[in-house]
Length: 64
Image 1 (cartoon, rainbow, N blue to C red):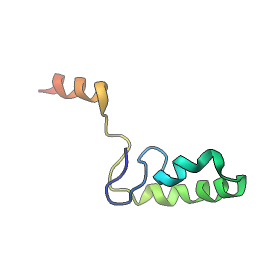
Image 2 (cartoon, one colour):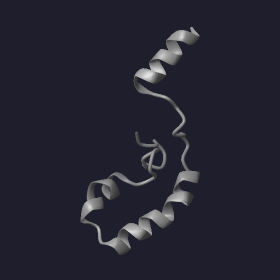
Image 3 (spheres, rainbow, N blue to C red):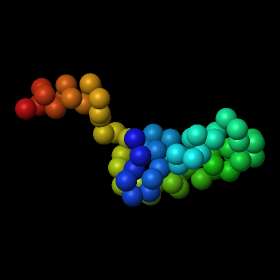
Protein backbone atom coordinates (compact mmCIF):
# COMPACT_ATOMS: atom_id res chain seq x y z
CA UNK A 1 0.00 0.00 0.00
CA UNK A 2 1.32 3.42 -0.92
CA UNK A 3 0.94 6.53 1.23
CA UNK A 4 -1.23 8.96 -0.79
CA UNK A 5 0.79 12.08 0.05
CA UNK A 6 4.39 10.85 -0.04
CA UNK A 7 3.93 8.05 -2.62
CA UNK A 8 6.05 5.77 -0.41
CA UNK A 9 5.24 2.18 0.54
CA UNK A 10 3.82 2.24 4.06
CA UNK A 11 5.56 -1.04 4.88
CA UNK A 12 9.11 -0.36 3.75
CA UNK A 13 9.28 3.36 2.92
CA UNK A 14 10.59 2.91 -0.61
CA UNK A 15 9.18 4.42 -3.80
CA UNK A 16 7.61 2.20 -6.43
CA UNK A 17 10.63 2.77 -8.68
CA UNK A 18 13.01 1.73 -5.89
CA UNK A 19 10.99 -1.41 -5.21
CA UNK A 20 10.88 -2.32 -8.91
CA UNK A 21 14.60 -1.74 -9.41
CA UNK A 22 15.86 -3.09 -6.10
CA UNK A 23 17.45 -6.26 -7.46
CA UNK A 24 19.24 -4.32 -10.18
CA UNK A 25 20.64 -1.67 -7.83
CA UNK A 26 24.28 -1.61 -6.87
CA UNK A 27 24.99 -2.18 -3.16
CA UNK A 28 25.92 1.49 -2.72
CA UNK A 29 22.56 2.56 -4.17
CA UNK A 30 20.66 0.20 -1.85
CA UNK A 31 22.63 1.51 1.11
CA UNK A 32 21.69 5.09 0.18
CA UNK A 33 18.00 4.14 0.08
CA UNK A 34 18.15 2.23 3.37
CA UNK A 35 19.81 5.18 5.13
CA UNK A 36 16.95 7.45 4.02
CA UNK A 37 14.16 5.15 5.25
CA UNK A 38 13.80 6.31 8.88
CA UNK A 39 13.27 9.92 7.81
CA UNK A 40 10.89 8.89 5.04
CA UNK A 41 8.80 6.73 7.36
CA UNK A 42 8.40 9.68 9.73
CA UNK A 43 6.86 11.80 6.95
CA UNK A 44 4.03 9.41 6.08
CA UNK A 45 0.42 10.30 6.71
CA UNK A 46 -0.73 6.67 6.82
CA UNK A 47 0.59 4.17 9.30
CA UNK A 48 1.45 0.53 8.80
CA UNK A 49 -0.61 -0.42 11.84
CA UNK A 50 -3.82 -0.07 9.86
CA UNK A 51 -5.08 -3.60 9.40
CA UNK A 52 -6.41 -4.50 6.01
CA UNK A 53 -7.36 -7.69 4.26
CA UNK A 54 -9.14 -10.52 6.02
CA UNK A 55 -7.80 -9.70 9.49
CA UNK A 56 -8.98 -6.10 9.25
CA UNK A 57 -12.39 -7.10 7.92
CA UNK A 58 -12.91 -9.64 10.71
CA UNK A 59 -11.93 -7.07 13.32
CA UNK A 60 -14.39 -4.54 11.88
CA UNK A 61 -17.19 -7.13 11.65
CA UNK A 62 -16.80 -8.24 15.27
CA UNK A 63 -16.70 -4.68 16.56
CA UNK A 64 -20.03 -3.70 14.91
